[in-house]
Amino acid sequence: MSSSVDGLVSGLDTTSIITSLLQVDAAPQTALKKKMSTEQSEVTAYQGINTKMAALKTASENLQKSTAWSPMTATSSNTAVTATTTSTSTTAGSLTFDVTSLASARSVVSSATYASTTAVAPATGTAAAFPLDVVRGGKYLGTISPSTGSLQDMVSAINSAKDLGISAVAIHTGPNEYRLQIASSTTGSDGDFQLVASTGTRTKGDAVTDPEVNGFTQLKAASNATIDLGNGITASSSTNTFSDLMPGVTLTATAVASGVTVGVTKDTSTITSSVKAMVDAANDALNAIKTQSRAGTPTATGALTGGGVLAGDFTVRQLRDKILSSFSSAVGGKSLATVGVQLSSDGTVTFDQGKFLKNLAADPDGTKAILAPTSVFGNTDTGLSERLEAVGKSATDSVSGTLTTAIAGRNSDITDLTKRVSDWDTRLADKKARYQKYYSAMEVALGKLQSQSSQMQASLSRLE
Image (cartoon, rainbow, N blue to C red; front, side, top):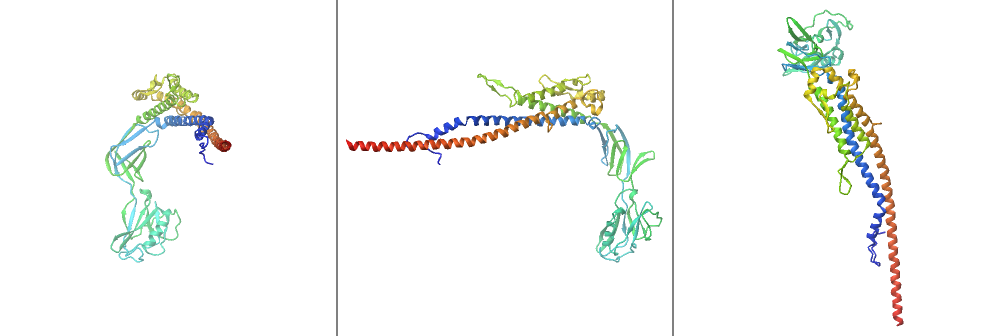
């Protein structure tokens, strides 16, 4: 049936009449939609505050890590050596030394050359006779037994024996000239190896004193990296990395160098940044709560304007009070202001970095005791970061958090309201159909009456 039933007989604007009637009938649905919009706005506001509280919880946790309170930084005077701290037990100090050598792996190349990698007989020179036994540190490791005498098979036999600690490659040294190169897989004297004639009777670990076979030329000897500390004192490493030459510091050499100085100093920038990050996160959370819960300003009619979505909300008001209380309460009888953290009259938190650094230098343990938690440093009271972490967790916990619960409650209401609005869509559609049917029937009835009236007037005219 057409929705247009404007009266052709009555002259009534029945479409407008039906629309007006439906607007009155839809008042309950309109109220539901308004409530649903309000609930959706509240969910968005809660979620925004929840994000800020999660950031506050993370910043508080970061400040509780013991590594944040013992930051040391290592520097090197020469790019040939890099220095990094690896332990919280690193102490300040410096060391000057010379890098006299870098670690190298032994490598040899065949004296004989081959016309191709598949050639069996050498083109020039005399090749070492396989099979060969591999020896390291005077102990037998294993045997290399190529299936043929070609370079290709030699390389395959060596590289497939993973436990020998050596690798091979066929190198192209000139036109129709290939050689076999064998190298240790590791640098330093521990990776040194020898190739001796195989007896076919050795077992792994047997002592070997046989001389190395002829047929190879050494390209590079196995050697350790060496640091000269002066007065005949040296340190060596099978790699170019020296661990704990200075406690908690790793040195890596990339070139020979003289007069290298590595210094380790306390780095206060990390802990300062961590404290500032926590204060900033707290202010972000307080500002978000303030924005969403502001009361608004009364207008001339008594209505409020400019109010927050969560004005008067107990959940966020309580959350704000907990954050402020964390900053206003003393720790171990000491005000947070002693370490540069102070609650202002406008409800924000300030951080005096200069005052913090001064107190940290004069009383590092006391500063830790105020800001860090009992569980890490054994305070006699709950540190600020632990307080704020607890506030953040109580608000954002995925199961029991106050904000989590509030969001879940609103989402449940929205689901119910969405169903009720949908039910009203069906109800209003039925009402519209009934209105259209009613006015259509009225037009038909009026049409019949009009027809009857015309007939009666015609009859009366004939009687005159």
